[in-house]
Picture 1: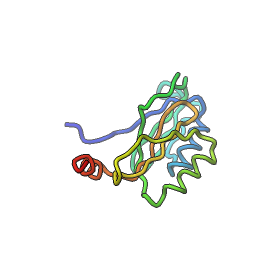
Picture 2: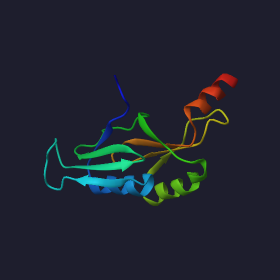
Picture 3: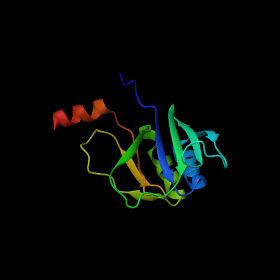
Picture 4: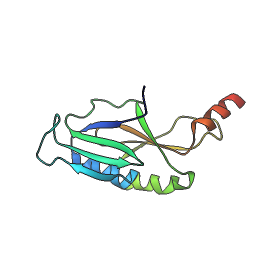
Amino acid sequence: MIQGLSHMTFIVRDLDKMEEVLTQVLDARKIYDSGEKTFSLSKERFFDIGGIWVATMEGDPLPTRTYNHVAFKMSPDDYDDRLQRIVSLGLDVREGRSRVAGEGHSIYFHDHDNHLFELHSGTLEDRLRRYADA
C-alpha cells in the first residue's frame, strides 16, 4: 500500500545554485551534503521542505522547459514576499494559468536547470468547489 510521498529528486548542474533557490525561496533546511563522495549516482544534497525530503544531485540539466512542475503550498499572505525572493535571485517568473476566482493564487518560476516550481495558496477542496460552482 502506498503511504505517501517519500522524496523528490532534482538533477542540477550546480548544487550551490539550487541550494540557494531551495533555502531562500522555499525555506529549505539542508540535512545532508555528500561532499566529494558519491554514494548514489553523483554528489548529492538532501533538504527538508515542510516535512518533504528533497534531494538534489549533480548532473545534466533538463534540456527544455515544460509545464511539468512541483507545487509547494504557501499562505495567501506570503505571496508578495515569495515573489520578491524569487525575483531577487534572478529567476524567471512564468505567468500563471488563468484561474477560476477563489481557487488560490500561484507563482510559477523556473530554476537554473529548467525545473518549474509553483507556490500555491489554494487547496484541492477549494479548486473542486470552484469548478463545481462554475
